[in-house]
Image 1 (cartoon, rainbow, N blue to C red):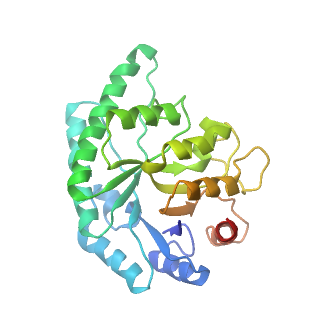
Image 2 (tube, rainbow, N blue to C red):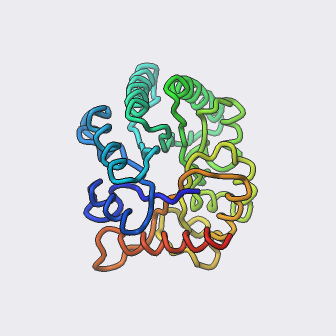
Length: 278
């Protein structure tokens, strides 16, 4: 396993600040973000020259990057909207591959139908979307790490049963997970460790965070009652042979800190200690 910091989450919010922070913390990996590539938020398209410059800056500093946090605006409302969405996704995957990255962490969340009778139609939409998405991803050598959602009330694609159905329908090697510990805890509880084992071959990135059942996105430290056993999470990841990146998120803010400098440092120290004594 390799610890990583997401660019923009520490220091002054710049990539340069993140690089300096990582070097000071002895963290060797950086997760880039699409939103931090100039022009992306305005056009929805990644600029190859600018993205290559970011990758080069990380490598020049002696650090590594291979994954990008990528929350694409998309719509599958109708045939035209879906075609436009896939066109942009295809162009962005080509750019990411040319820049030397191989993993995109995405959150794909469509509102759950009000009428349960419409569930199967939405599943058909999900499956069709992922078939095309992963087909293009395979062409570019990209792994799609769909962010694990534990909120079954919001979307059909949530909880172990949702991802199990998706992987059975779309078995592409490009179809995988960003295994979010907090979200998985919301839906799985103590079953989370078995979920890690079940989806081990599909886990491409890990978001390490804590929560309480049904508490959603609230920030927590990692030694709270009723939260996931972080040491057991790491132990299970080690047992299944996970070698990808692990990054912290949703850490509490501390008055006077610069972004999450202090809480991220605490998280890195906590994870390093666990990994040392596994």
